[in-house]
Image 1: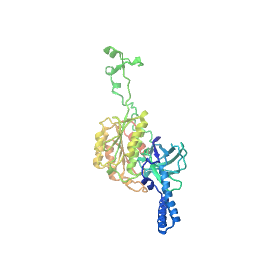
Image 2: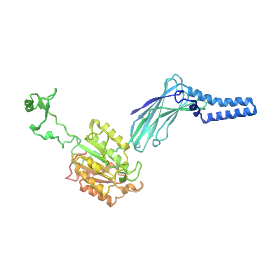
Image 3: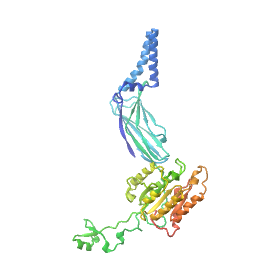
Image 4: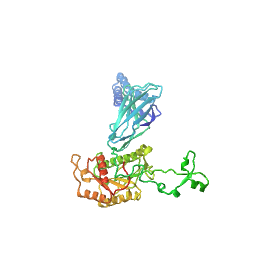
Length: 453
């Protein structure tokens, strides 16, 4: 939940001064009265009718008087906005709470409250507020929803003031803005294990100190509270002070999620497109691996990663929520790249120390398939979800059919290079493919690498 900024709108002459501001606020009714009054006054002057002149002056003065009184009214109104929540998945709803406070000593008149929202979030909300007593407040709320990922600005909040006769309306804007972040949909994944490898804190990947002999232990100085059973007497005699063995720390297993964002690899657009499926799949894999305690990094075809990501990626555990939030914010605005190759992503992979590699790939030509095939050498295990371009190019009503020989050939190349490669037809469930990948990897006795719990 986030609280939007507050601001004040002051309906007095200090806002946007000048008579023009007041006259510009005349409504259709006010302009009609003014025009009728002027016309009546001209006719009265030509015809010499004093009674008609008085009627014309009354008609002309009434809207001008209302505009002047409304413009010079000196009450102050403060407004605030609160999003609940500020980050929602695609197709999810958020509620926007608005609050208006009258911080002046005068009661307000009729107020119209309007908030600016992008068209994709729905119609612009408008509320009519009755008289607000001095020191009082009014609260209203509305819902926003988007099927498309992105960051959408909300605001500024606008307040429209009106006189009792409806002759004039003046608009005041607050300065505060808020941002609603629509993140990809995250699908819960089954707690499978890819070919019996270690879990997040890998018991199968011991630190070098755990395999070292007694002479290779790196000691440190004794600290108050250290267990005396950890005293290293040989180092104590060497340095002349009490030394203890360092505690052995388990090494956190790593996982890299590769997302192919090349525009040439996908067809179609919209919330049900192939690219959106890949983005949602990458988000689901990232969250799942973080929850399992892995150090996770997000990598794109251009070699970019998440701002603020460490050398080993984001660590799971207690920081899972914050790490997942940063990654989801990045995926919320990720778009197609102009690149045509995956060589930069290949260069970003550390040789042999990358851990488990999970890739979500679009259509691959022969050259890019060869590049992806080489990536398996720089990982401890590789799983690829390759979108079938033919089935995704069909209409949603079509029944997904088998891919072409070209797509099958690309999958064969990846499998021969050590990948667990699965084709993704239109409408496929990521959880089903996730389980299928586990079954295929479990059937390969020679597979080694990181674990997926």
